[in-house]
Length: 147
Image (cartoon, rainbow, N blue to C red; front, side, top):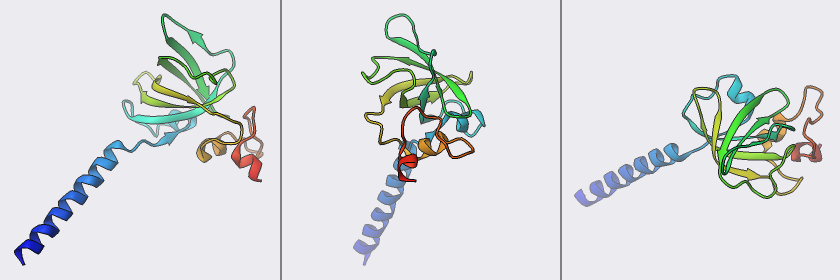
């Protein structure tokens, strides 16, 4: 009987540790509008998705790149220090992983460019729709293709 109790206690502890580790490593996806409205605390690690605004890409020293990521409503400055994907360009949809600074600038650790015009995260596709249901994105989205 003691062995069954010890086994159950061990199972409960392992489950609790697994759930805690999962929550700490979970990253949520946000759009620039989500961040501008204050739903994200500075310093939080997250994924940010949107379109690279035209005329916003500025190359600095070395691999440092500053650009503005936007959706239909809001935009957010992004800084990235690294090699950009080959598909990265102005008007392109991207998803960046990083942290939001207290100054409102997003510092990206990783930048992923979408690889074709048929897929983007559903939250991003929805946020790129204006009030009339038309997309402000310069490409077709999953949401637009299925309607």
